[in-house]
Image (cartoon, rainbow, N blue to C red; front, side, top):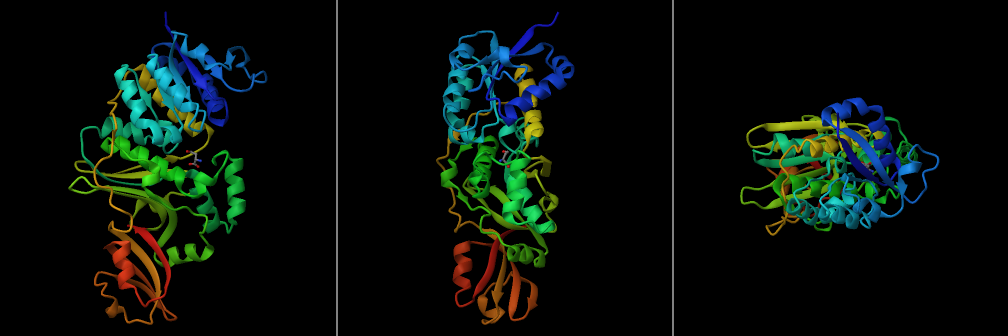
Length: 400
Ligand code: HSE
């Protein structure tokens, strides 16, 4: 006879109701993997859920969940920092594991939540907070736990990738593409964090925490969004042999210092991230022993995110994987303008190319008084100094 594995859902919006639906649809498979019978005992929401099958287990008071010892796992899908953080903390302190899709909470408070989970011998897992269905945190927590990660590059926001792809392939306007992303349930309720790069930055900080055990606040990392991107920028990226994407990068130097940034990038032909289109996300990880690995999947949406939550439910129930604590980062975070990046540039040719002193630059195109250049491994500051006297028509970080 199976035992019952009682869970509580916090939030019954797009993701919460998607998780309930996936649990019902896949119940026999999930129960078999758990070895127990999964039961959604409570759903915390502002509504009474009378139009759903969960009216009988709807609650408005979190204390009911907290004080029920039969609930072993809380699935937090509320969005926003408060009260999601407070409820998660209280659940962990009460000896309940917590899983979440809430990147704002993990990025801001992951250090405290992971430490509390450790202190109370329970799990705090956040696969669904980064990359939707892409199993990147499982990979870091399980497969890569014994190796040294050196570099992470990712396309981590489904909404912006969808918008950029639509603008590029279908000549959609920014507003049309955003409206479609909202309709599909990819965008946040307030999509400004998608558009301005903050959502990607939060996810990058979560990956940095998971990979290096170092916790960085998103406000300390350089991020730039896509609100100013035009058709001319897409054309420039294409002329350089690339595709324009919003990309996140984190690099660990040999001395332990970190460089991290989120910005629109020209993703060049050699880079597999170039093929990542629409709502898809991908993360390329460079690790010492494994070399480059790439993880790919749907980065947003109801069912892909629910799929990631189900995988965390199974990991909690089966006590799988190393759970690493995060320490507040006290090392050197290299400033964006000082870090070495690759660049694509379009400049006028008023100044002779040789006079720029960019010995390693490669001319990609030269026409009508302008150059498109690829310039490897130079800081933004140094590049600006070399380009004095040129008019820079485009400049974008490059990923190759
Ligand atoms: N708004 C987010 C995105 C949802 O578009 O990627 C998934 O985190």
